Image (cartoon, rainbow, N blue to C red; front, side):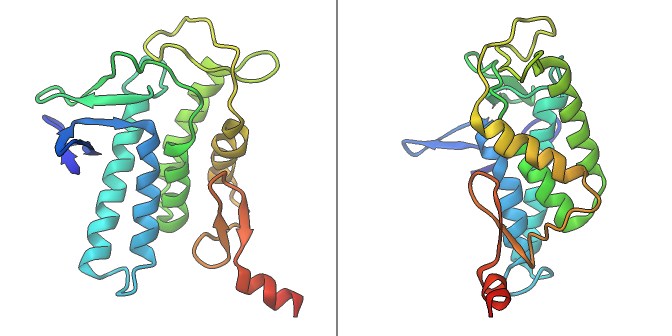
Length: 207
């Protein structure tokens, strides 16, 4: 499923439909960067093993593509999915120009920054945060953007619960220099980005 676009060589994960590849990637898929990186760092054969290095390389490449889904839009906001066309890299899906405040890209940015310490992930996260503030913030909350290709458009009166639970939390933790969160040694995140202490640490504390 791992593919590369032309001419820029952007890595993406295609859909498999009925045995054939559909060269599109949903914003939802952008969690894979973080998952692959975690797999690499916890590989039983060690981070330096060929499989771990392969997975980490793909994690970084897919996350870069997810960042580009934001950076290449006039608003700096990613669409629901992009389609990869030979010779033209990525294009916004015809019925996917909207953004409903999804968290998957910033989740991977947070994880990769935690694991690698590379400041570029904080920089990309800051760009995304600024774009959300500029184009999605209202007087009382945040709204979904119906068209990421237009800088002047009325927001939808809709803010998904995962925006505060995940998107904003990951963006905050990404920039927090004093966070006690350690995703390798002490904490596990559930699917709604709630950090939980590892069970063995909780048992030690209770004993």
